[in-house]
Amino acid sequence: MRGTLFTMLLFTTACGPVMSGPDGSVEDGGTFPDAGSTNCQETYRRCEVEFRFRALDEQSVQVRGDFAADGWTVGVPMKREGNEWVARVSAQWGSAIQYKFLINNQLWSTDPANLQVINGNSVRTGVRCETFTCPANAPEIGAFDWRDSVMAFIFVDRFYDADPSNNCNVPGVIPEAQYKGGDWKGVTQKINEGYFDRLGVNTLWLTVPLKNPTVAGGGGDGRMYSGFHGYWPIDLEKYESCFGTREDLVALVTAAHAKGMQVLYDFAMVHVHSQSTLWQQHPDWFWSLSFNGGQCTCDDNGVCPWNQQGHRCWFADYLPHWNYTVAAARDYTVKQAVWLLEDTNADGFRLDAIKHVDDSWLLQLRVETEKLAAKRSPRPRMYFVGETYDFGNRAYLKSFVDPATKLDGQFDFPLRLELMEAVVTRRSTMTALRNFVDSNDTFYGPNTLMSPWIGNHDLGRIIHMAEDTPMWGNPYSDGKDRAFNNPPTVPNYRRPFERVANSFVFLLTSPGVPLIYYGDEIGLAGAGDPDNRRFMQWTGLSADQSWLRARVEVLGQLRRDLPALRRGTRTSISATDDTYLYSMSDGAETVYVAINRGDSEETVSGLPSRTLNDLYNLESVSGPSVRVPARSARIMK
Image 1 (cartoon, helix red, strand yellow):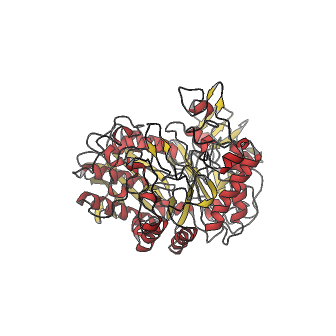
Image 2 (cartoon, rainbow, N blue to C red):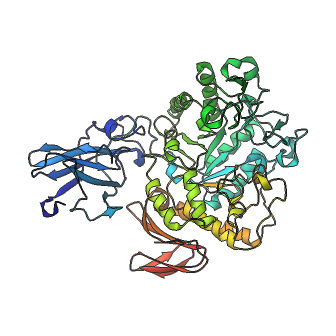
Image 3 (cartoon, rainbow, N blue to C red):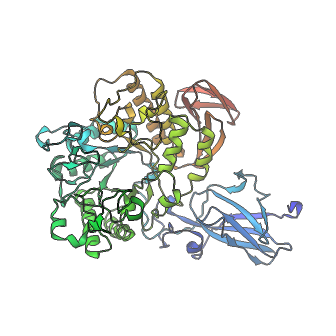
C-alpha cells in the first residue's frame, strides 16, 4: 500500500460549462444523446464529475467504479495536468458513485481522503451540478416520475363486474378458465372509490385490451380454455367487447389520470390466434409451423426447444408466431401498439414474453412511441417493462434493458427468487438476500426501473408459499398440480400473512416499480394457472386477510409520503440468518428498514444512537439497537 505517499484526491462536480465528451465511453447503452435542454426531470440530468489526484512518480492512474457498466474492468485513464492527474466522467444526477484507483495497472486503493466507504470502495453520494445536460427524449418537469410508481396488476376479467350486459361465455370451456364478468367499468368504479389510493397504488397494469376469439383453445393439460386473459388476440384494431367498449376504456384511463395514476396495457406481440384475418391474409408475416420435419410448437422434447427456437416456435398449434424480420409485420404491429396508446391516452406497456421477439421490433417501438410522447405536454416517459421468464440469468434480462432504445426495466425474476427463499419460504437466509441486493440494486444500469415483485399470474399464490410448510417445495413450481385437484383455501392462521406482509415491506421500501398482483394484498388463495386467477374477493374477508390489507395500505402510504423510500439509494447495514437492516436515503432524508423473518424476537444493531419513530408500527424506539418482533418489521426515521 502507498500509505502516506497517497496524496489528496479532489473529487469535484463541475460547475460552469459542461464538457460533452465522455458519455459514450463511460456509459452503456442506457445513455441518451445530450440535447442541451434544461427542462428534464432530475433523474435524467447528467453532470460532469471531475477526479483530481496530486501526482508523484506514478506512470499511470485510472479511476474505476460503477459510474459505467464496464467501469470496474475498463475504467477511465487520468491525464496528467501539471502536478495533478485529472479525469472527468459523465454521471447521473443524484447518483452515488463507488470508486477506487488503479495505479500503474497494479495497485488498488480506496481514497484515503474520503471516509465514506461501502463494500470496500470509496463512495461519493448525491452527485449534483449547476450546469447539466439533458437527453433529447427525456421526460420534462411536471410529467409523471416513474420512480414514484407503485403498480397493481389488474386481471380485468377477474377483478370486478360492474356491467353484466357485456359478460361473455365460450362454449366447451372448463369453469376455471371461463370468462367471469370483470370489466373496465369495474376497474373504473374501484378507482373512483379510492381502493387503489388506499393501497398507495398509482399505476395500473391491465390485461390485453384487444379482441380475443370466441372459441376455446386447448391447453397443454388437455383442458379447454377461453381467451379471458387476453393473450390470444385476433384483431389488433378492435377492443375486447367482453370487457366493455372503447368509451369504457377511455373513461377508465381518464378516471385514473384524474387521480394522478398511470395506465399500462399488457401487449401480446408474440402471436395471434389462428382465427385472426392477419394470419389468414398474411401468412408470410409469421413463422411457419413446419420446421425440421416436424411441427414447431415450443417443446423442449420436440424439434423446437424453447431456448433454441423461442424466437419462432408457436406456443400452441393455433397461435401463429410473428416473424419480425419481415418489415411489414413489424411496421403493422408497432403502428397498432402506438395507436392503442394514442387512442386511449394510456401511458406505456407491459411487454409479454419479450425474449420471444426479434430485437428490431422493440427498437422500432421505442422510436415510434417517442414520437407520440413528443406530442404530449409536458413530455412524458412512455414506460416499457418486459417479462423475461428467467430466475437466474441477470445478464440476459439486462440485455433487453436500455431506456434510450429498449425497455426501461423488467420484472425482476432473480430478485423474486431471492426474496421468496429468504423471507417467504425461509429456505435461504437474510444474509443471502442482503448479498444479492447489494449488487442487484445497480446491476441494470442508470435510469433503469426494474419491477420487484412477489406474486404474479403464472405461479401459485404467494400466501401458500408463506405457510409454515410451503405448499410447493420447488421455488420454480407453477403450482398447476393443485389448480384442479384439491385447490387450496385461505390459511386459517396468522403466520403466513405476516410473512407476506414482510415481503411487501421489502418491496415497498426498494428502488424500482414494485408490483402488487391483485388479491395478494388480502392473501387471495389459489394454486397455478388458472386457479391463481380467481375472481377478486370483495366481501367476507377473514380477520387475517383484513389485517394484511391494512399492513399493505400503511406501506403504500409510507412510500407515497417518504421520497427516500421510492427515490433513495439502499445501503445495507447488517444481516443475519433471520434479520436484515438497511437504510434508504435520497440525500434529504434517511429511512431505516429492519425485517425479521424469524419466529422469535430479534435485535438488530447499527442504527443511530437516538430516538427513532417507527412509522410502520406507530411507536418510538431507541437506537443503536432495537428489538423486532417475530415475523415483523420496523420502518424508522
